[in-house]
Amino acid sequence: MNRVANTLISGLLLTTALSGTAWADDAKKDAVEYRQSVYQVIKGNFAPMAQVVKGEASYDADSFTLRAERVAALSKMALEGFIPETDMLSMDVKTGAKPNIWEEWDDFKAKNAALATESEKLLEVAKTGDLDKIKAQFAETGKTCKSCHDKFREK
Image (tube, rainbow, N blue to C red; front, side, top):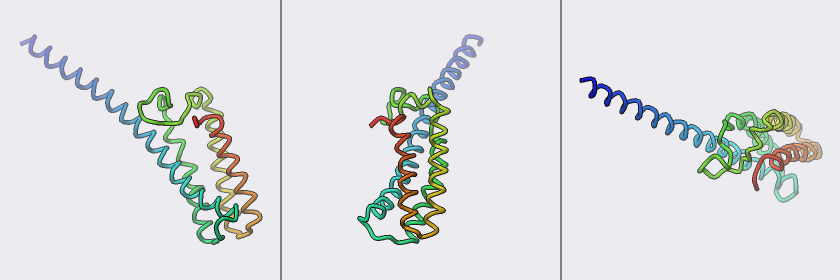
């Protein structure tokens, strides 16, 4: 009886350990997919605003403001998807996140906060309808985005 019980308990512990590892891997993949999704939606809203700013598309105040609102909201969400060991070297999922994100976490977090701040400013300026001010703030928001990409994202 002892032998059977030990075998069953060992099997149960092994199954639990393996499922825990699988769950951890799933959580990491979910985190990567989450942040990639957030950034894709940011890009999907930022690109049409860039066309307006460059004069490649006509300016529609309501549409521009809606897109700025989305970017402002989304920019506060991305950081949630950056959990440890979800960089490009630790994952079998394609990600451009460099390992230095976690080595320089405070700087990365500050750059994310700056993006949220600049995105909020863009939203406020968008509400004014002043295209010259919008263009200037859009450039600042874009620079903030780029500063993070330059340091923490594999091209």
